[in-house]
Image (tube, rainbow, N blue to C red; front, side):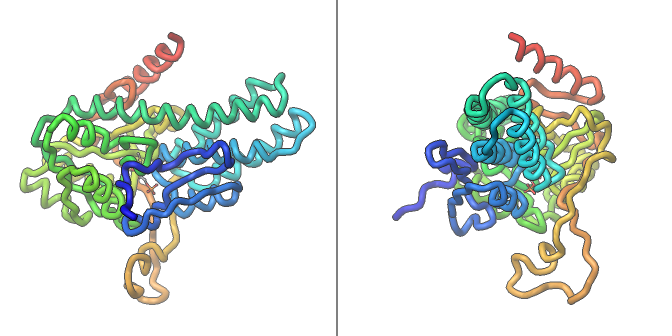
Length: 362
Ligand code: MRU
């Protein structure tokens, strides 16, 4: 049987009838499109931790669906009993990965539904949680598309674009964030030349970004992480678009490890670096990058995973941070669904949130 194009699959969704979180197992891509159906909190926690579902917006959506599924199973006679079990499930799911703020953002949004509806029955609250989880996913498509439109306004047909990691459809509900301008530009015949960093150690750029852009028919060239300066020096790159896991108030941005190096090189060569950031990834409680908790992952990811044989001496010390923080001074703009923030970011990000608050009131 012919396999569907990867872009026709839902990255993360809820099967309401069966009460399951449905994801593409991203650790198997690009060679195998395996769909996982998850029922329990433990299964959802493991899937997030193992990066079977990954990317900041996608883990937010998975967390929201996961906590709804957990809430559905709570046996409680009154609100207090229900709420105490709900909080346990929420905190447990929140502990699966620490850096992407979207996970706690989505879980807090789900908790607000519970707290705002104390007067309702448990069954009614669970139904409202169902609606909210679906809404969080649906909203993400609008957010990504809007970021894509703003991003597209910053580039021109024929431009060379570089990206790091996967902030693509596989990291969101649709379009991706950093890839959204690429998809929208492609529809308009912009003929971008995209360069995708392979993204050591877990190869999200090679396995996921190159895969999804190539499947879409976009001109994509895969490079190793240490080749970014070569392509910039040659003048092949007009703009860098990357995603993010947490943006601080001063604009410092945590994203996949290696992003900060790309930012420094881009600044040296005068190439603008844009952070594609849903407002759900901007943490207005986090003053600077110094306060961002960076996840550290197992040594095996750099010593043996993806190799036929172990490629490091037994017992060697390792350091494997999953993210790094790009200094705001290397960032030309932060593209959100409510417009583009330019330096100084303290002021422009505040204005973005004011615009968002006004839009919600209307
Ligand atoms: O460890 P990962 O694969 O979850 O890291 C993902 C990234 O760093 C993405 O760039 C980020 O989450 C933005 S996704 C729109």
